[in-house]
Image (cartoon, helix red, strand yellow):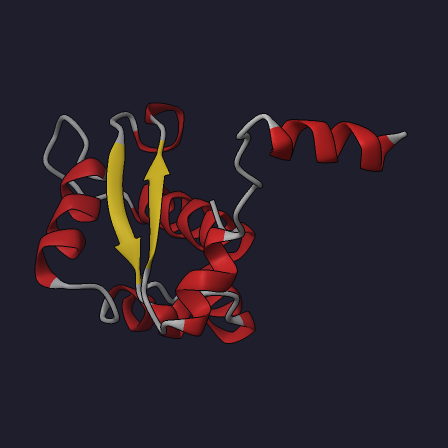
Length: 113
């Protein structure tokens, strides 16, 4: 039944779903992520470098509180955007917010979203 439905949909011009993560990996491209305001208070859009996608070491470093090695993999504009999103009303940059943003970004990138 499912194969008949799929065949009918394709015959009608429907496009098959694409695995963007696999395509990005094959082309060694970074992965676009969008972090919602519930994570950092503002919405952020940026690219996760291929070196960080599905990296156990990167995730472990962030969970252990060592965000700097992971942050250094991003371009300057992305680093500044994450830091500004983590800055509170007193001007202090909250490490907990930086960690939340990085974990959300690495998780989303590994899922290929």
